[in-house]
Image (cartoon, rainbow, N blue to C red; front, side, top):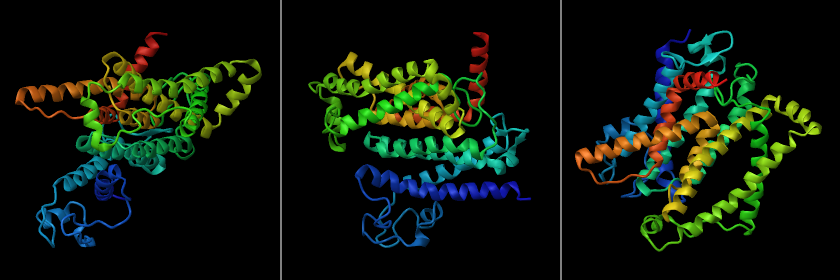
Length: 395
């Protein structure tokens, strides 16, 4: 039998290596540079970093935070992200498979390491992928006030594909129609209603994307780049209301197709066929994850549009929209909404900290959303039981 400490050591080592890659993502992705080429090099002397100087955490400590060749200082951010990622991998493993109320549970009462070996590892990897994307997005957002959409799209694909095939890998049983939006392992919704809305919205999204790529729909903030993000935010004469109306036009086909598909699936001639389709685990898993994506996007996008129209300045960024969409694809519609509404409390805590210590630096909202998603993932059973009780008490 493999000892527990071996799992923890492997989780920390693997996490630290992923953290080293996240450092590459944080620096290169928002600057449109390749993540693979050229190999890691010192920005000072531009010499390639040898493999023994690229060991996560350890190399930075042994080199004293300096380049071996030119002695240029290496920011401690690299070691911090590697350490944080390693500890994150360990913490999630401990909480999901070792201790506490959040332990992963399969049919037959399998918990702990037994559950991990029986397929829980797949669920663990999907959640870890989301947390890594949140960590990288937060680091980029803190530095450049922007969240690369490609990072969010990658995590969304992981959520959609992972949830679709997850039920065939992990023995968690058939979906329970009495549970709406709650999950123990993967996102779950009531298949007879929400999946039809999800499918229709998916068709509408394809239509909107085609119209956008052909130029029929204009892209909002089309000329906005990294160098003028802050300038546009502070420009009182910039037509923010006009720009956000382009996003309303983009969303119109999604909303319309979602409603049309939902109404069509209620017709007697289609209701039975649609029900049989949604009973296929791959289809059911994909549509439930897709609905989580749309709900995650919707709560932030509605805030962005209403806030921009009301105040005449950009309220939240599109990166935040896609970030919560990616989170919704992994953790489901109900929990991503909960995360959205608890995020302001983390923002308030930061504001109080600034007030108390007389700090003046403002930070973007992406890190607060990321912390909220992490909190919901860690305490999801607490929220699940609370929401279940509310649902059952209301009939």
